Structures are given as structure tokens and as C-alpha cells.
Amino acid sequence: MRIAIFLLGTVAMIPMWGQQMPDSGRLMDALKDRALADQAMRIGTDERIKMYQTLVMAQPETFHYQNLLAATYIQKVRETTDFSYLDRAAKVLEGVLAHDGDNYEALRLRTEIELERHDFKRAAESSRRLTQIAPHDAWNWGTLGDAMIELGNYDQAAEAYQRMMNIKPDLSSYNRAAYFRFLVGDMPAAIAIMKEAIAAGSPASENVAWCAVELGHLYLKAGNLDEAERAYGAAAKVFPRYHPALAGLGHVAKLRGQTVKGIEFYKRAQAGTPLPDYAAALYDLYTAAGQKDEAKKQMDMVDLVDKMGLAAKEKANRNLAMIYADHDYR
Image (cartoon, rainbow, N blue to C red; front, side, top):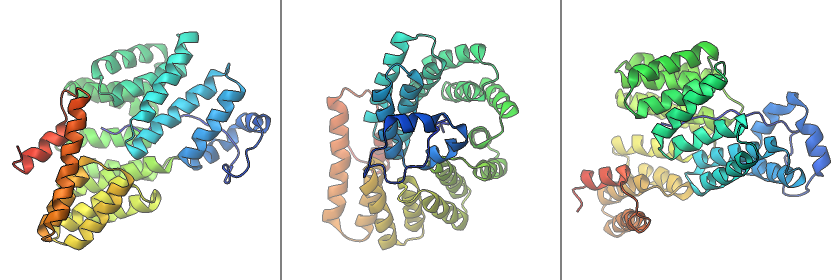
């Protein structure tokens, strides 16, 4: 399950970061102005990374800047599925916690990494500890609910999500509530609540786009292709070149038998993030189009991912297993 992140970053809008580097003094003064927090979230993720790296170098003793950098690395993982950024975030947080083992921001973010790495038992333990430290921080109840879902403890997840919703009804809590209603088979409520998540909005456009993609998935499962297409299209407008949105549009086209259109959307999604799921979809589409050579290239890519996983001693890969099973591939 995807997890949104909200962490205050406060800085003046810097639209041309790469052309002229502002001095760190000006940046630090800007960071003190909380009224500019939303502007910081609206600059690109890469620009925020550069900004926080500069601040960390200028004031390495200020752990807050290091935590902001780690948070932005985690956001980059969600946008690109490049887990090397997760390793960078973990390294930054390890450094902070080595100097200050009780640093709340760092502990909070470390829980995020535990969830991303599917260490759900540890994430549950960390979240419970944080709910005791800060029971009024809604986010800790959200991560606890996420861990409980993955561990199969739905009653405890529902309780945690309700606590989160009671404290702070926003995009983050609404999207979790929608997912939970879907899991228990209440599709109308899931769709309605996911719309509330989108309406709540977020300074981080990728978070809104992610909810729109999830809404598209819900409509798709409900058999409503027109609404699914609209939701995926809205996500692509909110966050241009967003690979899950492009893949969603490709999947709708595939279901409608629009082979050429489906190929184009999936190629664009794959260009942004080469996931094996996209290669498998392109394999199907190229096969349907009679382009056997192109289809083979896509399945070769899936096999390469499998070999890389085996070399890295990966114990299991659910996506690859599903791809091979769907294609009766051995």
C-alpha cells in the first residue's frame, strides 16, 4: 500500500535552482518563514533534494535539515520506484540517530522506511512506540494501521485508522480509510472516500496524483472503464509523466482492445520507470499486434529482472510470480 508523507519544508520558491545557487544564509532565513512551507512542497523533488543537501552541508549540526533531506529521498522513491533513494534516506537517518537516539523526526521517518522495506513487524513496533510518545500525531496511527493491515490484523488496523481520522481528517487519512473500505468489500464507500482524499488535496502534487490513480483502480475493479480513464487522466494532469497514471490509461486501452493506444501509454510509463509489470503488459499488447520480436524483448526484460533478483538473493517477488503465472511461463 502506498503511503503519503507530509513533512514541513519551508523555503522561498526557487524556480531556477540549477542556474544560480542562492547563498545558504538566505536559504536558512527563508526556512524560518513557515508561511512559505507550501511553496517548498511545490518545487520539484529534485530541486528540494539539492536545496536540502546545500543546507545540510552548511549546517550539518542541524538535524532538522537532514531529516527533511531524508523525507525528500523517500518521496523520490515513490515517484520513481528507485529504491537507491531509500538507502540514501536510511543512511541519513542512521547518522541523525547515532547522534540523537531520541530524535522524533528521524524515528518517524525510520518507520516509513521499515514500511517501504516490508518490515511490517518492526514498523508496527516502531509505530506503537511513537503513538505512546506522541499520541496526538495522526501520522503514527496511520503507519500503525498500515503495518496491521499487512500483518492481517484488520480490527487493529481499523482502530488505528479511526484514531488517525479523528485527529486529522486529510488526504492521508482519507486514502487509508478508502483502502480499508475496499478491503472489507465496500466499494461504493471506498470510491466516495477516495474522492474525499483527492478533494482534501496536498502541497505535494504526487500525493494527489497517487490518490487519483487509486481511484482509477477502484473504478476499474468496479468495471467502470470510463470513470477509471477519467481518474487516470486527472492524475496525469496533476503530476505530468506520472508512470502509474500512464500505465492505468494503457490498461484501460488494453481492455478496450485499443492495442496501438495501449502500447503508446505503456511505453511512456516504461520510459519513466521500467517495471516488470509494464514489460508484461507490453508483451501482451505486442503479441496482440503481431509484433513477435517486440514482444520477446519485453519478456526478456522480465527475465532479466528475475535474474537480477536471484543474484541479489531475493527470496520472493510477487509481481514476477504473477506475471509468470498469468503467462503460463516456466
